[in-house]
Length: 114
Image (tube, rainbow, N blue to C red; front, side, top):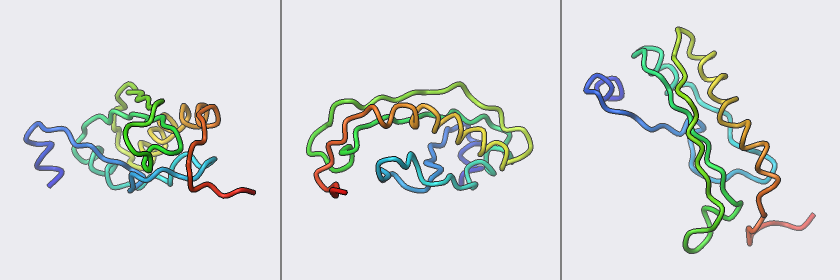
């Protein structure tokens, strides 16, 4: 289905970590999965990575929590190696997240005291 959509000229949005859940504090994302990168290489289409910066209570907050920021990065050409593409995109996406995550307020109501 993905190949057909691309052949029809449509874009596809993929969360390569396989989830939309907010990870625990200190863990920026779950490891990326390779499927979307294999698709990009096979179809020879660029990947446009983006980083979501959000407060820790983003998914559990009633209403829209303040502080959500989206960074759209330059497109990455697929090349011929899905693993290399995945590694490059993962670094592009996670670098600003790692840098900013500690600066965002931890407003989760479910956090455990150490």
